[in-house]
Structures are given as structure tokens and as C-alpha cells.
Image 1 (cartoon, rainbow, N blue to C red):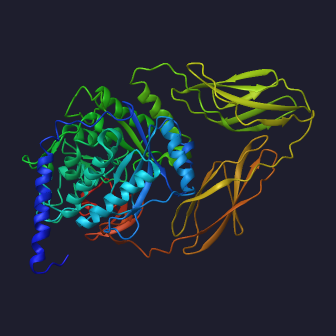
Image 2 (image 1 turned 90 degrees about the vertical axis):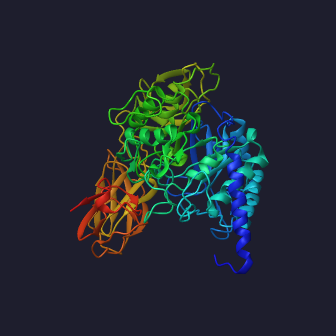
Length: 611
């Protein structure tokens, strides 16, 4: 920003004042712990205020397994550096959205507005932008009744000016103004009633152990740039949930690279926050450890949600190491070899992708976390089973299936009711035998938990058994929610929601042009396509009797031909199997990531394989 004459002095004075204020904050940074927030073992989920193919969910329909729902996202409305933040509920009226926020809060949940995200870059380069940020964010929180603010600044929102080399006394305006803004918003609402959380990427936190943007030569000036913000707000910070996904390899406290997608990575990344570390390996700039209750693991809910998806078993192996002290053979925690019993919990991107993945994340990890804390008397019934359907009908039997219920302590089984009879089932399906031919039956299902609580009844399903010797002439339902999950110049990947049928779906047929492709599951990869060409793909379900459902069609245009490998460059989003050239050699991408300076192919063999 160009400055003339005497106007240069005022910004410098204001920065010095801000630095002085920050130094005063440090007097109580380590003596005023933030309040214990939510439950002792917390599960946080991000809720999409948009539909990106994972499916839209009303707030009131969010899985009850989550303690905190982060509404994603509030974003700048008039340029990245104006400070003006806006939020408009997607697929809601304002009144309906506010009612759903209040409904979740009545269930004991906390609903927090998250600002930024991958597409919502925010910079506060001036005090005017800072004040606009404070005003607009405060208005959003008050309008919708949010319980707090989550800082999810990504991209180029935060950076460090050259020479800004001490995270304890930052001078870069976008850093100083953000710290001031967060403290002002927190003071407005009061520490006891307001939640402040952060969700940075590993690049902005743990990478600060190896490189710090304000002091290193030829490295990215964003490296470690969240550290001064975390440090200056640690007395009011409820928790931080670093995104342990979409990350390149990161050096841990053992000075070894750790690659995402396994327990080793999660333990090493969390241990850096729980132990503390010298920033840029400068022993005079020691970033102090956070309290265990201020740290959560940030995880993708499934493989669609982001690179670095980690299986349930690997995540819980990491939690065992962090909470119980069950050490991994590959990485030993530095701060406490006996674990951190007060470790806060887990976060996921996202609630929507969790539902898309049949609630694997929330069901599995809620059960794990609940087993860590003493139980209390359970009086909460499970949710009612949904989408009960008859999959197979004969003259004397019917097979039913339904979507799993959820419960605060876990569902232990189900009961199928018809007439005066009841049949118990342990899973989400049941075979009912001994029925009469050519007879109409009405079936409902209820879930039960370990305490004996029973849910409300499911939707009723009316089934008429066939006559003796009758054949099947009922076609399956059409596939729904057909989504494009990936494409290239020569291939297209599709997914869809399973069809239902009275005797069961046996497969699907995909037609495009004069071609037909048979598949067994609800995903398909179609290869051998022409570049930059539009195709119409029609998907039909079929059953054992050969009946075909109505078709569902999706139009997709393949990518243009890449024309050979391109030169590697920083700040580019690469997909698995992309090829680049660097230093006279050709490399093949091993895992999706966004390139950064310092991650050139020869330096990161976990990301690139030389051909």
C-alpha cells in the first residue's frame, strides 16, 4: 500500500500500539484457562450451507451424535480485504433457519458460525477492515443466535511480512488486526457464553516447526502464520481442530516426515500442539503447549470429503495413543508418554459427508468417546428408523430393510411389528416368515438401546404377499442422486443412491450412445471416452426377474486433452496420477494435494513418484 508524506507515521504508531497490547495480553495468557466447553469428549461437525453432491441436510436433522455443529461458511461480501462478512442460509428462510438453530440448542447442542473456508478468503489489512469484520460478524451471530465463532481462514488469508520473525510479537497487519478483532468479538459476547475455535491447515501450524514465513528465505510467507493468532488468543480459545487432511508430508518432533491417512500422522501432528515446539527450530522462540482440552483431531468423514481419509480403526488407534498412552511403534508422544486423558475429541469435515457415508464417522467415534467417560442414566430414546422398504416378497415371507437409527449411547437392536406380532432383529434388516398368501400386512419398525428405551415407530410399509406360484412383475425404483465424482479427458466416475425392489436389485445398466455397461454396485468408472465431449449417461436398475427401472440421466463433458505433462508449479491442485516435469524428469502424483513452495517433487517422495 503506497503512503505519502506524514501519513506514514500513523500506521507505524498504531502497529506499535497493537504490539504493546499483545505483549500485555501475555501477562495472563497462561493463568486464565478458557472455560470447559460442551462435554468432556467433544465431537464437532461442519454443516454445509450449500449442496456439493454430499446431500443437503436440514439442521434439525443432523445426527444427534454431534455436540457442536459448525455452520459453513460466512464469507466476504465485497472483496477479500473489506472485512465485511455476510451469511445467507441456503434452502431456508431466515425464520426457519433461526428456528432450527434454536431447536439444536434446546437439545444441548452448540451451533457455531464458521468464517472462511476454501473459497472464503478473508484479509484484514487495515483497522477499517478489522472494524467492519467485528461489526458484520457480531451482527451475524446476534441475528441467528449462534453460540460462537470458528476461524477457518485458508488460502492467502494469513501471511507474514518479511522480518516478522517472532510469533509472540507479530507486526504484520493482517495478523495483528485479526487478533484484535477476535478479542473484541469475544469481549462483546463474554467468555462464559461464547465459543472461539479455529480450524487451520497443517501448513499454517505444524509446518511452523520447520519454516516460519516471516523469517525464512525463499519459503512461502504463509508457513506457520496461524501461530501468532493461536498464541495471542490461547486464553480465550476453546479449542483448535487442525485439518489433518489435504496436507503434504509434515515434519514432526522426531524430525521425520509424517504422511496423512494413518494413526502415525494424527499422533505426530497433535503431539506438536500438546508438547510445544521451537518455531523454525529456533530455541529462543518456543511455541508453548496447548492444554489437552484445547485440541481435537480434524478428520475427513469419508474419502469424498478430502485427501487423507483415515479408517475408523486407525483413528481410534491414534486416540488410544493420545488419550490412553498406548504408544505406536512408529511415533512416541513427547509431552506425555502416559497419554492425555483430557484430550478434547474429534472434528470432521463434514456432517453431510458423514450422512453420505451412512454415519460411519459419527456412530463409530461417538461410541469410542462415550466409552472413555462415566455413563449417566440414559432416558433418551433412539431416533425412529427411516426408509423401511420391502426388498423381497413371496407368498409366505417378506424381507425388510431400513436406515439405521441413532442414539446417545448406541442402538442395540430393532423390533418389527405387524398386527399383534413382533419380531426382533439385531441389524437393519429382517426376514418375516409364516405369512399367508395373497394377504395384506402393515409393518413398522422401532429401535431400542441398551437402557431399554424404544424409539417412535418408523414409516409404515404395506405389503401384499403374492399368490402361490405368482411371478415377479414389479420393476425396481429408479436410481436417485446421481453424482459426478471425478472426470478426466478420457474417463468419468459416477455414483448414485441404491434403488429398491420387491425381490431385490441385482445390478445396474449404464447406457451412453450405443454403449452399455453393467455394474453391480452404486459406483462406476467409464473409461475410453473422447476428450472435450458431452455424454449422456442413463442408469437403470434391474432385478432377478429381469425387470428394469426407469432411467436416470446425467450429462457430463469430459476434460480437454492435457497435451502432455506440464511443468510443476506451486499453488496448483494436483490429482492422483497427474504427471508433471521438474528438473528434466517426469513425476507422477501419488496423492491429491495443493502444491507449495518447498514441496517440489524431488523433496516430497510421498507426493511424487519419478517415472
